[in-house]
Image (tube, rainbow, N blue to C red; front, side, top):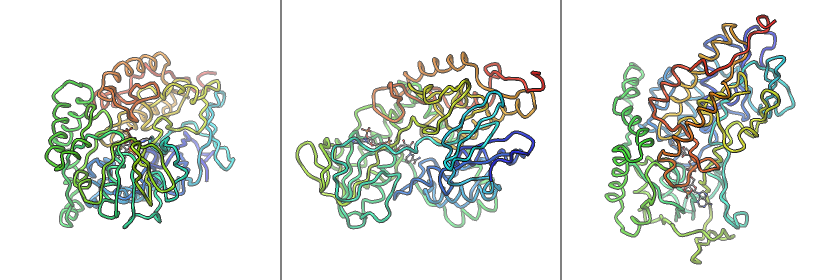
Length: 497
Ligand code: NAP
């Protein structure tokens, strides 16, 4: 099946069947549009399909990490496990009739704009060519694993693998396990394995700020109540305290000397002070940079996990990896059976390595040679009818990316209105509007907490924070009403003639 070339109306190609691609597909299906989702893998789910590590949990409250139009009574706990989330997306795609529109094992290797025909020509991995008037790039953010540049990695004779490439048959229970990296992923893995491994070494290059959060199970009675009355779920989703926390968090990011960031730092320091008994371990775990500079870790059990007698926290520099394990700079060797590389992702890739050529053959890869960029994170000059969900410079942080994608879709939908109504054949942002946005964004980004002097995946190759640098409310406002004057359209052929 490919996009129905004979059918009237716009033809849409959605790239990626993760959370954002499923959202776009549902919205287009509801609007009666002609669309196909091209998915490189054999199953939908994006990050929730790719990540299967023990302890995989979403640290956004489960009822907030759902589509606004599809509340879910079945979440087991306040924070959902990865497998549950995968099930939610599969059930939702099924329920909304999306599955027949998804082409699996169909990686898009190129998409090239044909200005005369005003279509995108997509090249699939099997050599097939498909046309679409509109491309929705929903290809995800954190999906290209980054391996550490540590000498000798290939020489390790046990099992070594990236956290997003979990090997189910690797020795874990009763084994000697090392975990390199203490971002959200490494922390969750250590929390899950501390009692399973005979010995677990957590290698930390930089200590993390750990924000204590509540965790509780939903009882069967509560779930039954949610099933009977979804308004109860809405109450949780719209909970004022939850949203106040989100707003406070983004104010903390943007006002690095304000009361909100001070409160976050204090809560984390109190957590460290009150949770860790051994003074030496406490100092090992004490961060030496600003809270939220790296993505803040939300955890209800990490500090318990690292105090388990099986666990060692290693802060010294790793010299190299040897066949037997990890050799530290001071000469000590940690002998290991399994080495988990929770070392993050190449966060600047977005749709790449897909070749994307816009008007006059302009290559997205060239355009993004310094940093990936897009006007309000959604569209790019010279790339007509090309829209991104969770694209570069959008908000990232400790909140629901589903909410972000839904707001972005509401914005894109208004742009699509110009095409659907026949007022325009193509739409793209004006180059000067984009340049102005980027200038303002970079200036603001440098002053955010992300730019306060730590290393993280939030930074682009030049050290500028790559994310949305203003408040959540500012993002919501911007997405609610596109500034149409910042867009340029071309007239439909019959009008132009
Ligand atoms: P990450 O935050 O980029 O963390 C990578 C870790 O690897 C850091 O601790 C880093 O140390 C360490 N590292 C990298 N190269 C190293 C090297 N050569 N030697 C020693 N250590 C090295 O990656 P992540 O933990 O996979 O998380 C990425 C993002 O995924 C998160 O920030 C979050 O957005 C998302 N995520 C979300 C959840 C959730 O619950 N919502 C769960 C997991 C992941 P340095 O800090 O010193 O660089």
